[in-house]
Image (tube, rainbow, N blue to C red):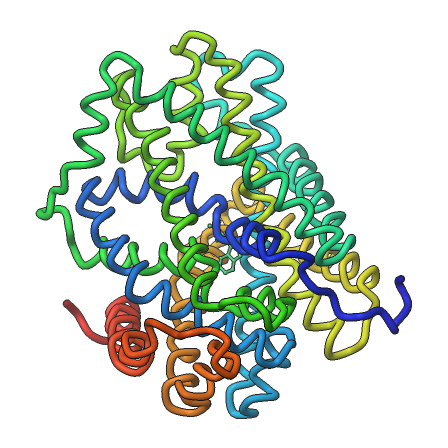
Length: 447
Ligand code: TRP
């Protein structure tokens, strides 16, 4: 199978595709970032804005990417190149984002493995903030855990589309939802959980600052895996018998459900034990271990929780790696084996650097940020929104909404019910919303 002559992969079933696409979307973004963003930006108010952006912008871009992917049957760069040479750079920025995101994603994935090991050995005793700080700033240990995570990712991608990515997602995604619901039930039934529920569900619109809106938009892109051609790549392995409109509704729905459930699993428990909801990125690795330590059978819930986080993280990291691999496989006819292992090797250099930037290299700052934060910032706040904006402009004003609709309708096989809505979103609402938030973020306009 590993010669340069391999056939291009395809999903074996639509259920498999949905699990893989939802697997890509549901990741550390939902379980680690969403609860702490909601925690720091006013709970329910942030959630409301987030939902609106998913509905209007998220669905629109998701459907656009899937249509471009299935139409061309190519990787992100090849797809743009085929439809319009002028937009090839958008695909390139996308593949570059894949490398950069994996550079820090692997590091956090490694932390998750470390925490599973830690909970199997009885959990985090004593000061969990000191424990976390000491672990991530040490030299070898976090790099080794990140390597484990990167190798697990590469092994799945190496096995191909239906035999690797689809198979892994079909097992891990349902398991993830079951575990998430178990942990959520535990959390909302703790004595004192009510305060957390109230905080999470009762919107405080006074906390809805421009910064909160920028964060919500960036989070929608990151969480739905949009703006870098991930859904172009996954869509390219899809048969013409699938209803893209339906898929582009189901995947954001599942992703949002997972994010909301993660909030229900985490915030009530945090309140029940008297911790701070706005703890920031440390919420999952510092606050939660304390919560588990003070909970009956906390070690078991800790293991379950971090295993589910690992499943979520791996089904996302494989999609990031696949975007990069699909490019060299399609365009340079590399074998999947060569693509997977060589690209993983290159990415691991970034990964090691971003892990070390938390410790021995923490004095080395670029634009005032360490390497890890820099990768996160450049991708989530700049490259992904830019990629999404350019995709909307591309469909709306170059390729054409009608051409995209043709791909969605398949000669009348499917009725594109939301075509009118989508047309307006692609041409006007989407670009304006993303453009304004983007310019504000860059400091070019201020609201
Ligand atoms: N969506 C994933 C998460 O929530 C991360 C991710 C996977 C991603 N593939 C992506 C983000 C493509 C942006 C683009 O953790």
